[in-house]
Length: 110
Length: 114
Image (cartoon, rainbow over all chains, first blue to last red; front, side, top):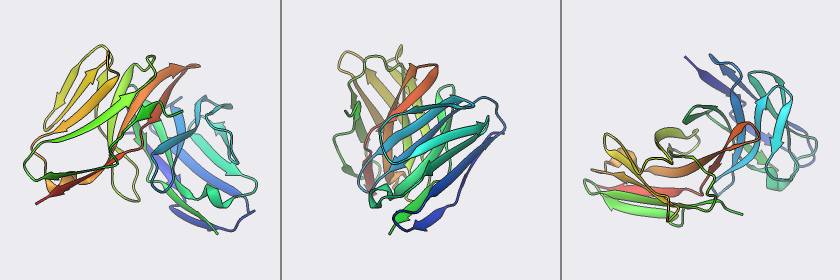
């Protein structure tokens, strides 16, 4: 069966510090992978999506970047966090007519 | 530019009655629509989907209706149960640059009152 792992579950980081969130998928190959952010009082904003290794599409210009070093690994990064980067980050993968989400990372930038 | 919109941030329904959640979209290239349910601090879970070639899909208590001419879809839950209380997101899918781009609405918080 397919599973998706996302870590860490919670993270508190100071402004200006770097960020690395990791997401891995098991039980499938060549998945479409996604990073979303849910900010307080807002919906799920698509940040990045990837169709394959090294292929990243960015939806919104911002302080974040994404990489896909392996087929089933998707990483969300930042060199210097801003207060506005706080939110709930979700990784997802797509199969046909469904998308499956990880449990999310609650990031608080202080 | 919000391509998928859920204009009702919250909805309160009596247990046993019908819950109707609405969603509007602007991009005519969307070819698949999905509904998700989300509890706090968890990832969304898939509920039901519908292809753009259909106008209705039913799964147990959940039915999704699609009106392509109005660019509108709705989720009906009947009968509503207390466990249905959660945030519901609609999502739309478009094939873009070889990938299925998946865009979500802002969500509607559904509260089922006993």
